[in-house]
Length: 434
View 1 (cartoon, rainbow, N blue to C red):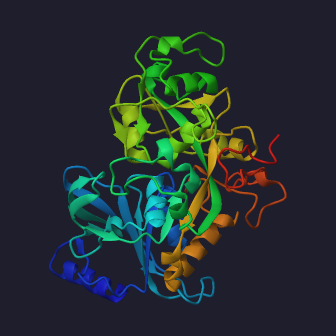
View 2 (view 1 turned 120 degrees about the horizontal axis):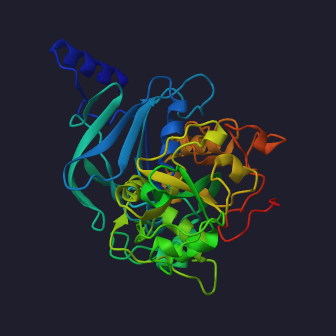
View 3 (view 1 turned 180 degrees about the vertical axis):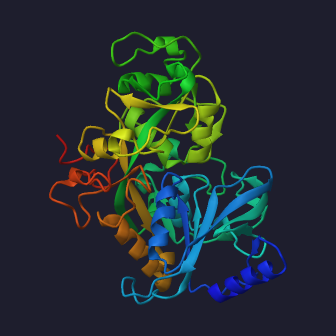
């Protein structure tokens, strides 16, 4: 496969073109891993996949020629053959398709209910340069899970969700989609392998209009955020600043919500409203616009004055060795005066984080080569020394139940390890925290 791709590139160069056209035949990949689910985890996936490669990984993303662009990608390379990878996959050409469109529920529902969903197709229609390519799609419809162009229905082998599968019932299950009604307990039992591998740290962002247009941070209490997200506060003049300096300037609050089925949304519902954990929870306010990916959520917050929303940490804070750069036109919220960062989460000072789970069933078990790749990928994430560092993936921290956990978990600022675990139960306080 790599030789075919090289030949295509040489041919393009000889005719004077700079665009790289892939061959139509992609059947020669030795490993074909189909992954779907969490959009918050997408950055980490893009960071960890290349660590398996003997050459530079190629990245393919969907690009709409009309309508919305589904959040789908694929990565391919020739795998290492240096003794570090399992023998079943070493030296093989591999492609991993990652669909994050629709969020974490698509890392649960397709496996529980045995439903095929669309993924990206990589073929000669994809064009680009420097190992980065786009593949054309059109007429995308998330609820119907339909579109034209480089899309095909396929079986999810590995699902990834920001919170455990049991959370995706009731208000966290999307109605009116290809996935149908929420899974029964018997269907959830089809997910026979659920593994916690990492923790993802989340944060609240506001439009810079809320902070006067210049501040990069602001402190709001968790109680006030609960009142914002359940609709009790509708204007910023009702919201007290957590430092006791008064209230915010008047202006309508616009809540940017992720789509129902998003693990990020489920996590916000758990943390601020008690959804799925309390016998009498509050509910996240309904909004006319929902965002089907982390990128869309961030764009919503930055694009409308008075906006507030939730996403995983997008940039490493200065205090953790990063820069002050934040998503365009946004400020980050310190909850009750505590900065959201991998380090504050790992040391137990900031508790807005959840354990990502990796879900599979009989389909992955019946594909031994793909199972070997999935097992290896998960193993790298469970290893405190090989999971993507905070520079590559700012929201990721290791769990203390993994391997190579240092004596002082918080000592390594680039690979912080939590000093407690929720043990796969998002409703449970992390054990080991002060």
